[in-house]
Image 1 (cartoon, rainbow, N blue to C red):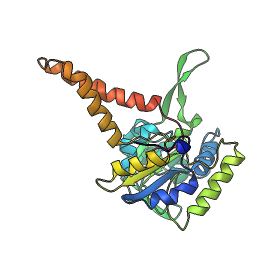
Image 2: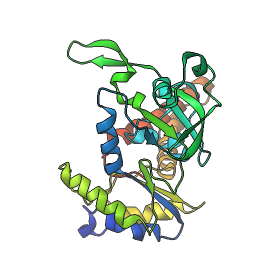
Image 3: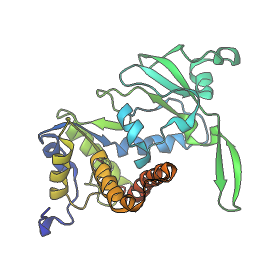
Image 4: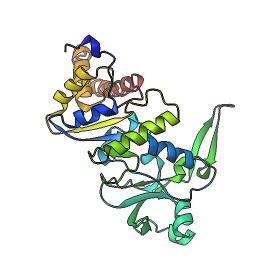
Length: 283
């Protein structure tokens, strides 16, 4: 692929997003909302349960395949029981402490919380999961593990709800009517908090039509080569190339060796992606 030398350092700014949205094969674009998350983390890290719920909504497709590439505190590792919310289903995953504080749950009603409904901000949600009550953390000063009451860490103060493109709870789906407000709010927030290069979008999730991923990636890479791209297309190509160059030398006698090497290949892909990750944008 030939790259214009003048574009070597070019990355995606907020101004570029409408052009990306208009590319053939792009179905929608979701962006990380720095302004929302910065405010949420600030209130959630306070040493008290919040006066209002701190809500995060993540599309199922991102949660399943790409969440480990982000800093969003969302995932099954925070669950005590139940599951994460489904898209557009008006579901919520919440901690017992917040159920007690905001919805008057008692020890007795908490035992049957999953499946019950709560009303919040003029919306009704079905409880589908309970967030952990405790978290083990490392004390780096004396290199010991400590169990911390979740009241002291922000994961307890965050609730997960169903993703709805019309509502922004941390991940904003592009809409021409609201995009200018989103950009202004995020750039102002970054300037206030001394972000470097506030004009750059931090994490971008681009959803493509079937068969369009490769041509869109090729075009993005040509126009914005300084970005770090993560996609199933590039991972599959890398893995296929790696398998052909390394595993072809293995004599297919012991099937266990091939299976183990296959697992190692998958792990190498993930590690390489993480090592080369820049906290700027994801595709």
